[in-house]
Amino acid sequence: MNAEPAKPEVLVIDDENQIRRLLRFTLEDAGYAVCEAGTGHDGLVAAAHRQPDAIILDLGLPDQPGVEVLKKLREWSPLPVLILSVFGQEGSKVAALDAGADDYLTKPFGGAELLARLRALLRRVKPAETVSSIRFGAIEVDLVKRQVTKEAQPVKLTAREYDLLRLLATHRDKVLTHRHILSELWGPRMEDQTHYLRVFMMRLRRKLEDEPDSPKYLQTESGIGYRLVSETP
Image (cartoon, rainbow, N blue to C red; front, side, top):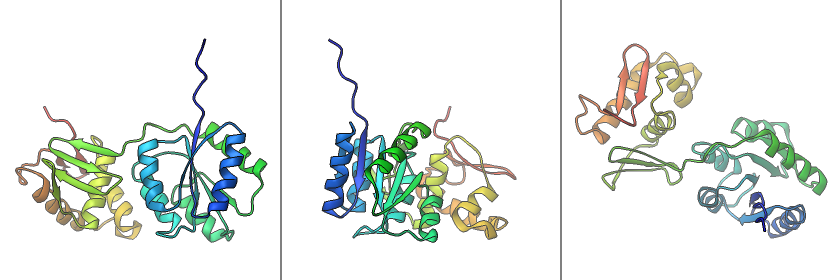
C-alpha cells in the first residue's frame, strides 16, 4: 500500500486565539497541516525548526511588530509569507511587501479567499532550502538567534558588524560590490562612502580571523568589494 503524501504545513503566527482557531479549522478542512505561534519570537523559532511550506503572519504581535518578524525571517529563509492583519492602509501593505511578504490579506477575511491566495502563493513560490546557520572554518553564524561563535565561543559583534557579516555569509563565495553592501546596510545615499566598509571589515577581521592582516575568509576584491570565502584550499 502506498503511503499518503504528506500534507503541506502552514505556520500561523497570530496572538489572537480566536483567529488561530478559525485558521486551523479552515486550513485543516482544506487538507493542510497547521502549527501555531502566538508571538513573533515563537514564530521565528517554529519556522526554523519546522520549516513549514508557508507562513500566515499577523502584523500586530505582542512582542514585536510583524514587519520586524518578517525582516528577521527574510535574513535566512525564503518561505512564502501571507500577511494577515487588521491594518488595511496602503502604507502598511507596502511596508509589509517591501519587507518580503508575498501577499497581503486584510481582516476580516473570507475563508475561500484565504485558501485561494494560499494556493496561488504555493504555486508561485518555490522555496529553496531553508538555512538557519552558516559555518566556515571554526566560525558559525546562527541566523535565527543572530549569534556568532568561533570555536564554540561567543563572539560579541555590534549590530552593524553582524549585519555586514550576515550579508556576506548569506552570499558566501560571491563578490559583493562596495555599492551593493553600502546600499543594503546604510541606504542608497551612502553608496560612495567606502571608508565605512573598510572600518567595519577591519573590526570583523580582528574578531574573527586568526590573522586579520592576511584574512582567510573575509577577503577583499581589490577595487570591487568583498567576498566571504567559505572553503579555502
